[in-house]
Image 1 (cartoon, rainbow, N blue to C red):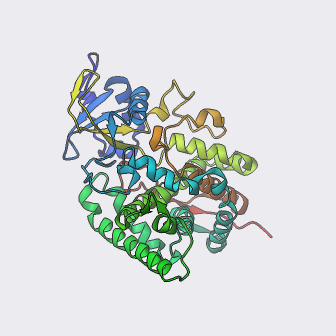
Image 2 (tube, rainbow, N blue to C red):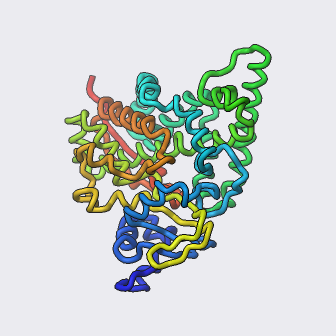
Image 3 (cartoon, rainbow, N blue to C red):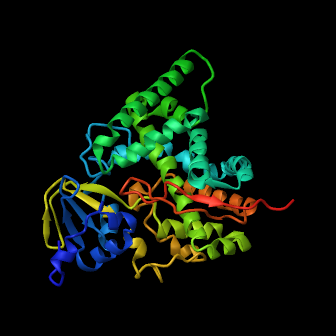
Length: 407
């Protein structure tokens, strides 16, 4: 709610799905930080409280005793009885599930994927380069993470377009729950079939595909196997976290590098800056703008009383533009030092820090390095368009053109 020195009309006009905020959320977040650190809004069909200041965002993300995930990260209230999705879990279930999957995301395990990722990126460029132009979102930024996701999970590459369609619907459902119902139903059915096929093959002594899905389906979970419905829900969460946000990370980084193009020219001249660009893109254009938590107990915050189970939208993106954390926070600084840019909140904080953060970083870095090497003349060829999901941030199109290097 507005502080004493706030113009209430300005502060309470915040609407996360208004055209102005969808076009560029950073100015609205700055206004919230300065004038209305706890905002109450009803534009999404339910009461949602929004926090924007760094100390509040960090406090909520790191206090899992007070702040819960059991009703899901969207503005709607998910069924807390649904288990398996770590974005809906609290300790001790969350702790156990994260421990069960974490071996697949340790630095050494992630680094082992680099040759495969690089080969995939090279193959994609081989396919698109002769045309001289393409939508790099569809042909590259989407294609590389979803192919990598299929490989990590052990899913058929032929299913990538179905997976993409489901992921798009699921992230839109975080704001508009009804729009994800069918996609959730179809993806759960798909995952259940895959789990049952693996368990049947294992019982019958037939070969089982490799990948994380087989680990979730067949690995010892306590004294038994993880229930198949929980494996299916884990697949649903990994689909969104495992490739949707990495697609936006790659697309956003290319967008900023190509507009203005001088940034791209510098990266071509200094390709060792690719890791800095990835981190600065995460800070400046976080693929996830916000997620929600609910409180286990009544909370007093900025003079307001929040009853138990209030939906609180935590603006991950807001601290990323905090001048107390980042010099020149509203500038995309291509060579910003890694120790500085990595203070960003884009992978979350606390026990729910993104398990796949290192894999996302690696995929994006490889994607940039291959394009810099293969298509140094890359340029924008039209205006990129925003993705539909309001609480995510990315481009759904990235028209680009280039000239092929002279042999």
